Length: 342
Ligand SMILES: [Zn+2]
Image (cartoon, rainbow, N blue to C red; front, side):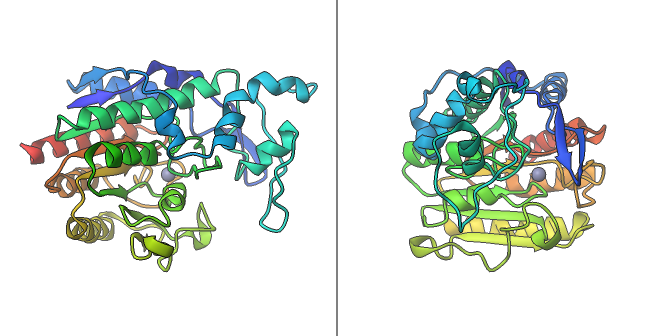
C-alpha cells in the first residue's frame, strides 16, 4: 500500500500540556510520526513524500485570517516580550465576546479552542506539510483504490477558522475537498477516532455534497464536549448530511463495529465517488487518553468493513497516542484493508 508521509512532521514537538489543572507531557508528540512511519516501513509498505500542492487547496477549506495568523505567529513573537519557545494564550473568545482584536495574544484566543495547540518556531512548516501529505494522498488516490496518508499533527478538531484538540489544519477536510474538486462526485468522510470529528462537521455543516459521519465517545462527559451529539445532522442545504453515532465510554469491539457497519450502510446509500476515513487509533483499549476498549482484532475487522466500499478510500491519520498497541493497530488495520481489497 502507498504510504504518504513527511519528515517535516517532526518540526512541531510540543512539550507540556495543561490537563485537569496540571501540566503533563503533551500526548501529541512528534515521536508518534516516527513510530507509525517505522511500523509501516517494516511491514513492507511503499513510502513516498508529498509534492508541494500549494496553499490554494488549504484556503479552499480554511479562513484566510486564520491561515495568516498561523503562518506568522512565530515572526510576530516580539509582540510578547519574554515569551519562551512556545507561543500560547490562556484567553479565549466566547460567543458573547467575539471581536477579533489586533494583538497576537488576543488573535490566538480568537482562533483557538484550548491550550493544546502551542505554536513553536517551525510549527507552520509541520502543519503545512501534514496538509500536503493529505493532499498528496488525495492526488495519488485518483489512480489507486487505497492510500494511507500519515498526517501528523492531526486535523479533525480544526474548524475553518480555529485550532483545538492538538489540531491546526483539518487534513481530512482538505483531502475531501480536494477529491470533491478533482472527481466531481460527492465525497463521504467516516471518522472512527474515539473523539468526535467536530472540526470536520463544522466545515461541511451546510453542504450536501460531503457526507460526514463520526463514531465517537459520548461528548456529554468527554472531549470535545460542545459538539458531537446525535441530533446534530447538518444545517441549511446540508441538513441530513451529518451523522453522529455516539457510543458510551468503555464500548468494545461489538458496538463499535456495529456502528461502523451502520455508518458504511449510510455511506453506500449516499453513493460517493470517494471515501475519506479519519483514522484515529485512540479507540484502542490501550490508548492513554482513549475511552473505548477496541482490540487489535477489532481494528482489523473495522478495516475489512471499510474496505467493502466500492470506490477509492483515502485513510488519513488522526489521533492515537503513545502505547505499544499504537503501531500494531495501524499495521493490523492496513494489512486487513489490503487483504479485503484483493
Ligand atoms: Zn482522538
